[in-house]
Amino acid sequence: MQTTSWGLVLTLWGAGLGGAAQYGKFSVIFDQLPLVYPEAGAALGFVVSIVGLVGIFFGIVAGLLVARIRYRRALLWALWAGAAISLFQALLPPLPLMLLSRTVEGFSHLAIVVAAPTLIAQLCAPKDRGLALTLWGTFFGVAFAVLAWAGLPLVAGFGLPALFVAHGLYMASFALLLGARLNRLSGETPTRSFSFRQLLRDHATIYRSPRIAAPAVGWLFYTFCFVSILTVLPPYIAPEVRALVMGAMPLTSILSSMTLGVLLLRKTSAISVVILGFGLSALVMLWLWVSPGEALACLALAGTMGLIQGASFAAVPQLNEDPQQQAQANGAMAQTGNIGNTLGTPVMAAATGSLGYAGLPILAGGAFLLGGGLHLLLARRRNHG
Image (tube, rainbow, N blue to C red; front, side):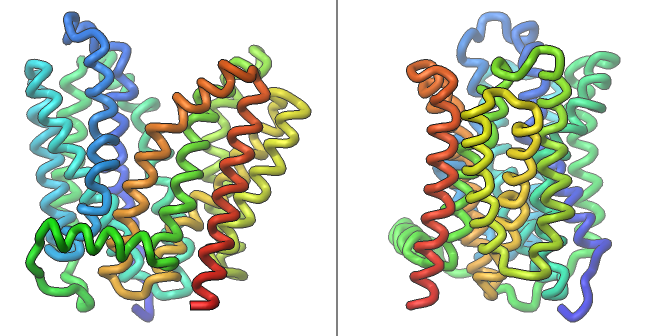
């Protein structure tokens, strides 16, 4: 692409917000689910987590399949399926059927987060890819903010089904918009046969490649830290500023990503920005170790992590020119991101439980150093490959 189709990029980002809402819509209403399923007990947790579990086991599969059935087709199917599932969930079906719908929704979510950024990269001029994919990297944070600001009042006024109906209509609207405007990519490959043996070979190819696997490797450590820090840190922040700081941290991360991150991406490679983000985040963890719960340090940490967030997505097309390899890399990011989100909070909670507050900067600082160090090792492999 010589010029960037910004209208389509923004529409794809809007579709991504719907995909993120598939993950988050049950999180924001989780405290209200016992009223619908009073006998469910601990099983209610699966209503939220099952989408992430699907991502852990099938992230790579999604990347491979999306590349084979073509990105436009996969995205449209995922949006229509997501719309139908949300409308079904508005009926508040029995828990086994709700869990089944969430499993199917997990596959729809994976197809969106693989196909949409792959399409965005192909619709951008090279000079604009950093900005466009940094914007894409904000989709989770923005979607959760919208769910909290608009979704919860909707539920308060009209009940839980209203949130699912609104989400279903949103997904259908973007399916119609993109179906009318989005053309098949010229670089897409025709459908190939799919087998378990080929799947294993492709897994090995992806994770052996210092180009395809690199964004996913860093993303594992970023996601391990981000949600777990936001979960474990609040009790150590002064009560009078706690709510303000916790509300500002995700916004600070997005702001840093969209300003300083985009500026740096115009000057240097995405991987260099990611490594810088990991290094600065590790330094801020030293600050938080010396000054537990310091508000400015918390905001500084959100800012440095924002560099990792946007640049990780921008690294995918920088390292992989072929759309099929980009889809594989995005699938690997979906897989490692869900692993990080799933493991981060319980491991961080266990660390602070045994070591006290010191467990937080030790574990998070170590994860940041590992993420940056592995990126340096992979860069060395690429340079000597």
